[in-house]
Image 1 (cartoon, one colour):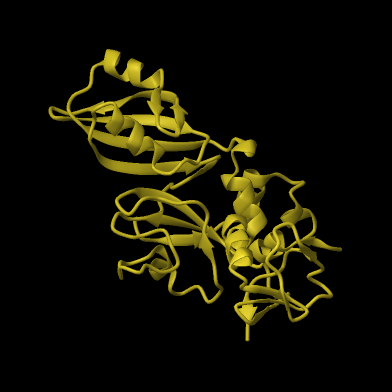
Image 2 (cartoon, helix red, strand yellow):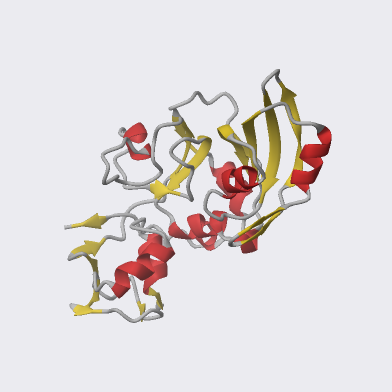
Length: 255
């Protein structure tokens, strides 16, 4: 069965669909030895010879789902041109090639998922699926309930209006405040930007949960594989990577 190339590349755990589109435009993808640059082009992963950067996509291994308690001071990428440590360094014991589902800023902490299943990644990140993510945020200053109520009503940003869900004071200190809120969108650094636009400096940001999945007792810097019921809880029983595992056991690039 033919599918869009960016979907096949994402399912192979090589990149997200968005990044796969960039790869296509850059001429890094070939099908049956013909370079394909046109977005929307299709191929059959079971029959066609698909290569990315000259390396053949393999159809052999099972999908991997990992949850990591990301510490501050790590970038959420596979590599960093500035030489900073990456989240991949924290899962060095995993032989499979996995990539982060969404992002947490260099200075942010908390729950981060990694996988080689591009369809799972798409489901978690796409706003259409409305998967809630809960954060705790520490800001400078002792905020009043009126200030928090005003923030909860939303903040206008250059790229749109941001309104969090269930925003409330979690803890008050003499010179700082802990807030808790829920978001269902993935705009870049939207929490930090909205609070800073309102005049509040963020000193810590921790993602506590994605859907029903929480950090629990997972220690900072540690990781574990998700259980099958946890994956199902996030994406549902009818999601293709669960319903048709033979189609989505595409994992690595081999020489």
